[in-house]
Amino acid sequence: MRYCRRCLIPDTKPHVVFDAEGVCNACLAHDRKNDALAGIDWSERERMFGELVEQARGRRARHYDVVVPVSGGKDSITQVARLLPSDVRILAVNVDYGVKTEIGRENLACIPAMGASLITYRPEEQLHKRLIRIGLEDFGDPDLLSHTLLHAYPLHAALAFGVPLVLLGENSAAEYGGDGRIAAETDMSRAWFDKFAANDGHDARYVSERYRIPFERLRLYDYPDELAGSGTRATFCSHYFHWDSERHLEIAQGFGFRTLPGAAEGTYRNYVGVDERINRIHQYLKVLKFGYGRATDHACEDIRNGRLTREEAVDLVRRHDLEPLSEAATAEVIAWLGYDHDEFFAIIDRYRNTEIWQQDADGAWYIPHHLEDLTWVH
Ligand SMILES: [Zn+2]
Image (cartoon, rainbow, N blue to C red; front, side):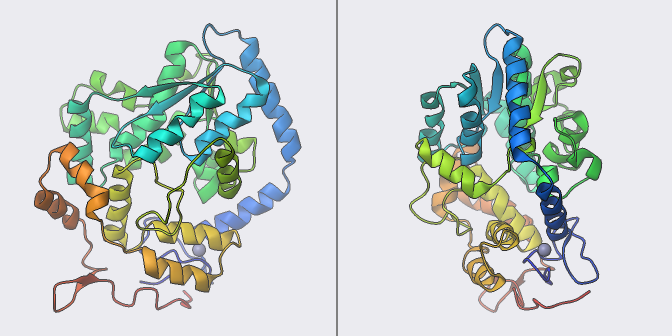
């Protein structure tokens, strides 16, 4: 494997492109974003945000003024916090699509305490577990359809309750470098959803056709096209406030957000992926398929933001990135999905890329020359 000269993104990452100096497209997008952000008047954006919220209130909706999709993570608690000075009626919508942790439940409980009403949507399990198994077994991604539900359901809820505004989190397209036109959008469109919520077209319609599941049963997993022209808009919070993980952590902790006592499995941070268990499996499959995981993602972000040197990052990635799935992280999920232990790990192991991984004489898997070739120029 070879790596970006500036961060630690490997050349096995899907869609990665390196320039002539060996710098990856995510680092270049970060430079462009910083250039663009340098010209942004955030106090003006905040004033625009105030106007947007006032307009929503002025619509005098029957029940609520704003819907906020929430996981109970630091970012969603911050989104709710941004609305509190406006004294609007907030409906926080949580999609409980997997196996919540105790700390996840506690963090979610911060939200009603902040002054927002909270509804948790739990999809019926027979169908939903089937969708998770399809994602895991046929695509190596147990979160395939959960991810579309997570993005679509709060929009459906806003339409059903007649709420004029949905305050989304970050426009990940703009944050991590994506399609220029879609990245510039302030609101979530069908095009944005297809590209960033639905993985390469493996969405509810595709699954409906391939697995003969009536689309009527999957509608809430898909973007509501009736949103356009409904009078409800779904807009990204990151357009109005500078999106900064560390700042969000501080804000959320002010409302009682709890972190793990130590690093989360597979990374060195203690505040990510704390609320739900299937996501760890989703992340580990990335390790098997592409030879890098969560610690690399976090280290690259910290290098770009000047919080870690590349040497410090290499050390953290070496210690955490390839950490195998533990019993503690998987036992509950395996039981819930109805697999037995060996069957589950056999499915996971099907996705190990043997062009990246090799086995030693004792049968242990390793990545040859992991994080060795760090000065490669294309
Ligand atoms: Zn890079």
